[in-house]
Image (cartoon, rainbow, N blue to C red):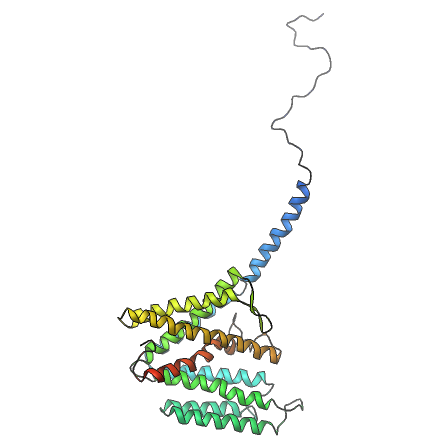
Length: 324
């Protein structure tokens, strides 16, 4: 018989338990985890889609923005040269939206009328430029009504005539604003900064906050939160530009109000461009600018805000900044 000091034990032996012991999952936990994983993946995918064009937008802004600011700073002639390039791109896109070509009539009437009117504005005859623009729009509309497109369908006479006014009035306004040798630089810088701030603020706040749609029948992607964010952002930037340009503290309050007016015009221009594209059945006016589409897509707010700024400049007088 084994002694009490023997290491041999009687009966069956078992392996010592391993610690820590794995507890069985709670009922329903596996199913809940399985449901949570797709939701998380879906949310990550939604966030990625929400900001997928941000990199292209940032690169385009970094390339185009400094050139525009440099032309504003250097004077009226460099700015006019930049406007000539921009207007050429705008009328090219508009004529193509109408299904026509710029090299032959009736499409060629649009750049001809716009460039002649803007050339008159460069000489300082702004009212004559507007009168010529109106005559050019009427002639384009009347002449195009008798012509046909390449596919044999009637030309978009009304839209062609409207394009003369849509691009031309903005071009004349931007030229006239900068050709004020005393306040032109500050006024155009103020306008550009406010438009950019409205676009950037609306983009960032709208993507981050979301919420109810601003005009779903026209542009499903735009929200009320983006509109409010863009308005507040442009008011802040407008006040900042005024503080930089003029030493009067009261000007910041006035500048914020003027910036709000221009910001509203900017957002209306954005909605108008969306309505135009919906009418023509296109997503972008062209593919000239990566991340933005075409010039009409990128400058839609400026096209609408520039005439408002020109009217304000006319009201305050030559040589006076818009917020005085």
